[in-house]
Image 1 (cartoon, one colour):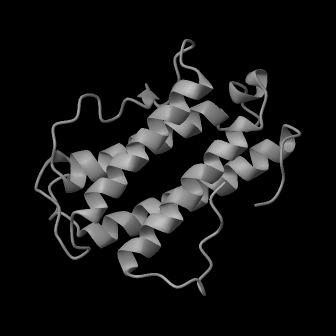
Image 2 (cartoon, one colour; image 1 turned 90 degrees about the vertical axis):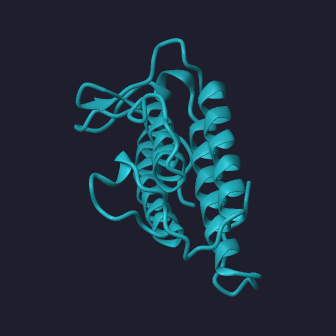
Length: 168
């Protein structure tokens, strides 16, 4: 597993810091869902009803929405593909391995995009921004870091309730 990017660990740039945190949170999500057995992956332990696999696909789609559809301004088929109606959704035939591979592929795409652009660069205009001016890459990455950190905390609680790993 990727080690926590301690604030005292030297980094060559702010870009590197963002990518380290995203890699850490992404791989921590993978480690948590990998430690759960199949029934727990598709079971909700919370009143909101989401499952660990639904959270995993949600984060992949969040990254896709903000990097590809938002910052890059690309046409993205089903940008809200993690949802069915008013909740997150994973099809019964989607496996943990499929979803982990998709999350990691999305992470590789994010890293490539971030590595090719300056943090101050403004995203392309498009529907992701809901009529607002596009944000800078740095603001998008800050949003992604907080999204991952928040949801990893949620998954920590769910994994503990399921008898899985506790703590970081």
